[in-house]
Length: 223
Image (cartoon, rainbow, N blue to C red; front, side):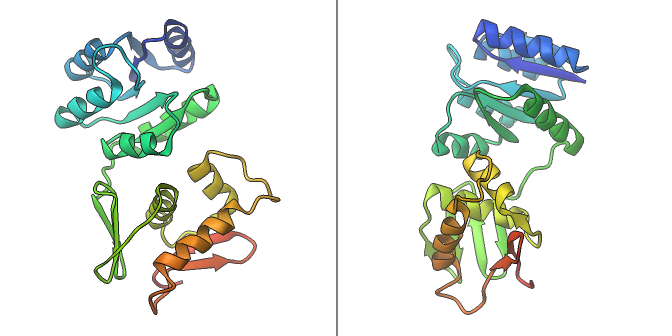
């Protein structure tokens, strides 16, 4: 399978090309956004690994232009680790987002998952019961009432809805939302769920966030 890496840092680019080739992929490397976008549009790649901070055309611009013309999996690999950056990348249509410094093993596993899954575009608006989440407009409503969420709360709700009817462990939630290994002494997940419940469930009769004993939490209309 052919992968295009768009990375301006020489050391990182060479490392990615060498490692991915040793993992069995055919890899081309572009050192700037303009060359990368041209190659992605003109050649037949199965996946693109895209940096954000590129000279000339940055990764955001490459993503926008690419998504307007091609529908292939894109994984952002960048040092930009702010939640707003992740949201922006996903809103532009990226399929995954990995922050530097990164584990090469994790990168390969994520690439394999994307290639196995293929291109699956998520609906702009996710709906369950009387709740709607518009991930493009970053908007949540329930029974037509706007609900203001922080970025973390929005990401948490998005994860729960995407994996509705599935019991998610605290470790999975912590990994997906906070990019951290879950520490049993840390109650960050429970605190975040409590705050989310106060906004999503407390004002309404039907509860959607459920505790799964000894596991974690599940988002479901019919637990």
